[in-house]
Image (cartoon, rainbow, N blue to C red):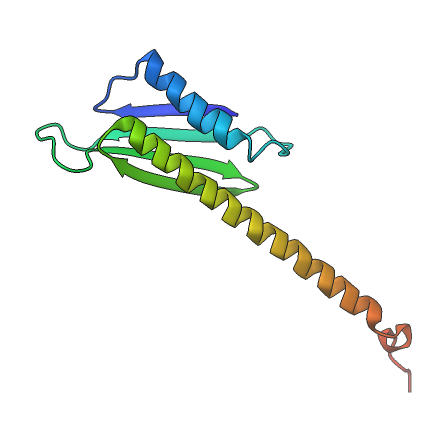
Length: 129
């Protein structure tokens, strides 16, 4: 999985880069093992405010492009690693939801084709008068 990391108001050190690659690349990569196309993920880490230390001041956003769809997860936290953990959990839910939709679409196509085979072959041809 190719991971692009963008930061705003934060210094990207090797420890933070390794943490993102571990959580997003390895943990999320487990869900996407069977994908045939190379996957791309964009991770954006933001420090929302710099003048006070109250509330959720760090934000993490992840975008994964999967089968022509863009899955987006966002999370806020008091620590950047907490925000990354939360966004990983949300991204797992988004992937499971996307997989469920794909599975339902496939099953719907199968039901449609099965219904077509139940129609009598004689009904497919119009009678000529």
